[in-house]
Length: 100
Image: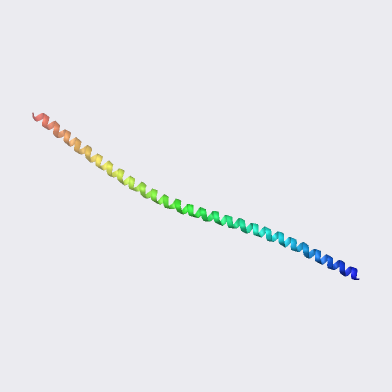
């Protein structure tokens, strides 16, 4: 009888050791997953920072583009006016030449 009790106790102890080993394995895997999640979170944070920077740069580039468009339109208007004045001047020069 004592042998049976001893055998059962050994089986219980062995079972408990196996359970502890499984729990250790699970804990190691959980720790590994936590590390990986931390790495993913860091990468996401880095990507968010980069996206913020890209958004700022895009806004600045859009503003620059709009300023350039306005300046080009202003230059075109001035060139048009210069062409009109030049044509008027040529007409005046032609009139003055014909008066002589």
